[in-house]
Amino acid sequence: GPEELRFDGRVVIVTGAGAGLGRAYALLFGSRGASVVVNDLGGGRHGDGSSTKSADAVVDEIKKNGGKAVANYDSVLDGAKIVKTAIDTFGRIDVVVNNAGILRDRSFAKMSEEDWDLVQNVHLKGAFKTTQAAWPYLVKQRYGRIIMTASNSGLYGNFGQANYAAAKMGLVGLANTLSIEGQGRNINTNVIIPTAASRLTENILPPELLEQLKPELIAPVVVWLCHEKCTENGSIIESATGWAGKSHLVSSSGSALRQDPSDKVTPEDVERRWSAITDMSSVKRFDTIEEKTAQLVTQIEKVQSENSAPQEPDLFKHTY
Ligand code: NAI
Image (tube, rainbow, N blue to C red):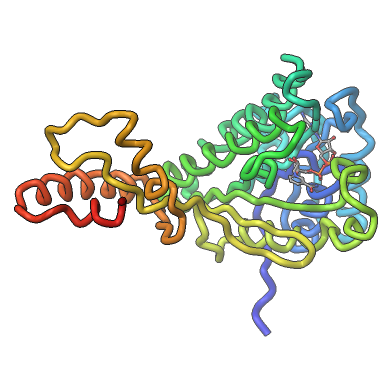
């Protein structure tokens, strides 16, 4: 079979690693030779309180299995302290798995500013702070692997999770840009979209389903994404129940809104073409902002050349 994927000599930070998915990631990294910083402030699922117990328990478990690990109890909002623990203890940092999270679910009408801020802070700002503290080390050594944790709630929305969904899509945007800024320096950033049984989902999903959603079934996907052999960058990878796949935003082919480059565009022009604009039967995928810009340039050229041709523009025919 293939050679075992090892992390000997690599230093890995897993945030929120005292429980759930983060714990499963930390244990698997530890069993593959990584030196693991097990970060967890050990609070409640709504962001209340703190305790050193959960991080300590995971460190003990990694060490008991012959691995290397150190606990860190800071909030991800103090990301520099988490990175300092990695540097002080192990002398370097290679991998950052941004996983810490809380929920403050409420219908939008009832959502308080505190519910909004706490969730934005832990998920989005915490990932910013922790990753930015590690970034100079990754740039200097020209190597790094970063994971952002998003959610299907972000991609599709979910009742009662306006704060959480917004933060999770924020992490997708953050990963998209870091994947560009890290390119050429062998710093790869990817997004994991997990669905797992944990205290965040224990009273949301039915018990039969929870049994098939063990975090241990997702950890191998995250560990692979963080291995030096994995060249994936800027991708959204979904995993649950012993399955993994890749997600991508897609765009319709769209419709021109005018015949002539000198024409104005009216709301009625938009109304008339609405079904063509929103027709998703032949979607396109764009991998970079340059490809997206090129599509717009092509559209300008198309209208200009069709304008110079005497016959009725083609794009008009199927609109009516
Ligand atoms: P969990 O509640 O079991 O684990 C999250 C851990 O993060 C906890 O141990 C908590 O103490 C820690 N934490 C919270 N705030 C922190 C902070 N400020 N600093 C450091 N640590 C902090 O939850 P689970 O399910 O394992 O979630 C892990 C990540 O996966 C989260 O980002 C969550 O939003 C995401 N996720 C989970 C899904 C699921 O189905 N379980 C679905 C989609 C995303």
